[in-house]
Image 1 (cartoon, protein in one colour):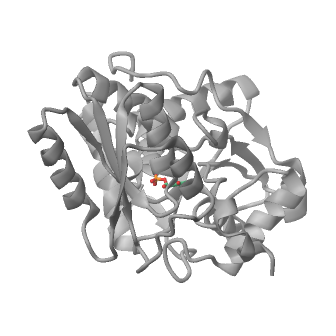
Image 2 (cartoon, protein in one colour):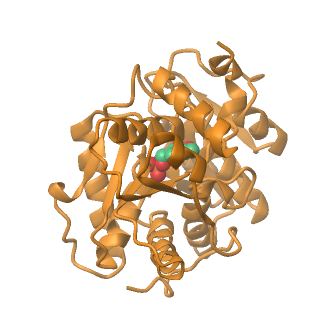
Length: 332
Ligand SMILES: Cc1ncc(COP(=O)(O)O)c(C=O)c1O
C-alpha cells in the first residue's frame, strides 16, 4: 500500500509519540496501556482533524479553492483546526455551526468557540437545531460561486475518503512504531464520531495485514448507524487507495454503550476517566470524545473483557479545548 501519490500538506512535522501510561496501567491493574499522542499533531491544540486536513487542504489547493467551508457543533474541534489550516494556507474560511442542542450557540463561550473568534473566520453561520448544515454549506458555496469565488466544502469531521487517508497514514505510522518499540498492540481504542479516524485505522490495519482489534467507541449515533457509517467510509477509503473494497460489517467493532444522554452530554464515567488520566498521567482528555472512549476502555478492563496480558493502544484524538468550555463539569 502506498500514499505517495496523494497530494499532502505537512502540518504535523514527523510522527506523534506513543507513550506507555505506566501509572494508569498500575492503577487499573494491567493490561499494559499505551497512548498515541494525536493530541500533539500540530495546528493549535492538535487533534485527529489535523491528519485529515493534510490531505483535504492539499486537495482544495489542487482544485484552486480560495475559500474553505466546513461545519461542526458549537464546540467543534474540527472547525477550529480547519480554520487554522485555512489561515496557514492563506485561504478564507466560513464556518457553519450546528446547534445539535436547541439554542446551544453562545458567542461568548470559551473553549473552541473562543478560538474561532480569535482566529476570525470570514463568517460564522449558525445553523439552528433541526436544520441541515449540509444544505447550508451547499447554499453558501452556490452563493460564493455566483460571486466568482472558488469554495471547497469539507464535510463534517473531515470524514470522507480523502480526509481518511490521514488515518491510513496513522496506521502505517503505528505499525512502524510497533517495530521500533518491539511491541505488538492487540487492541486499539479510538473514538468513533463522524467515523473517519476509526474507518481509516481499520482500513489501514487491514491493508497492512495487521490482525489487531480496532475498537471504536461511539459518542453520538446509535450502534447500527455507526457501524454502517464506519464500514462505508472504510471501504470507500480502500477503494481510493486503489483496492477492491473487501471489508464487511463483521470487521467493524464499535461499542455505543458509553454515549450516556447523547452527544456532548457528559457522563459520570467519562468525567471520572478525564480526572483519572489527568491525575495519574498529566494528560488531558475531554468530556465529549476521549473521556467517553477512555471510560469504555476502563469498563472493559473492569469487566474482564480485556485480559491482563494484553497490550492496548489508546488513540488520543485531541479535543483539549473542550475542557475549558465547561469547567463546571469537573467542579462538582
Ligand atoms: C477530539 C475528538 N476526538 C474524536 C472525534 C471523532 O473523530 P471522527 O470524527 O474521526 O470519528 C472528534 C470529532 O470531532 C474529536 O473532535
